[in-house]
Length: 174
Image (cartoon, rainbow, N blue to C red; front, side, top):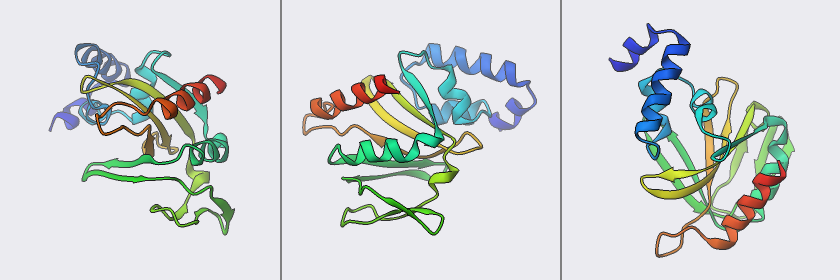
């Protein structure tokens, strides 16, 4: 019902309302903010300060994936209206064939991605529920998240320092 009322507002009003809510709860779930204000995730990510979110074009898909494949075990996440699905795994390097970016090589995550559907990639470094969180988010042409890759956490739930350093360096290189 909230989302239905929000769609009656102009985009600029919805963005203003979302910015206000983000300021009030800066460590909240961005997907909830997008849903509440009938915005795309791209719209919401663009509201974050440059210190928290850096955007790369989707044409960098293969380069970004190759970088992530060098990080070791990560957290691969799909968040949609029906749930949040997580896989802790290393990423296979992948290669193009038959119109797909194909994952093989014995990792827990295998399959065939529509890498060409990726229009933007966001490197996000922000608090989530009071803890620093670092993710790489792949978005489609509609501005919705295809999937995310998170810097892993150790047994104490702290970000892995080595992976965090790789994330920060890669983010600076974009």
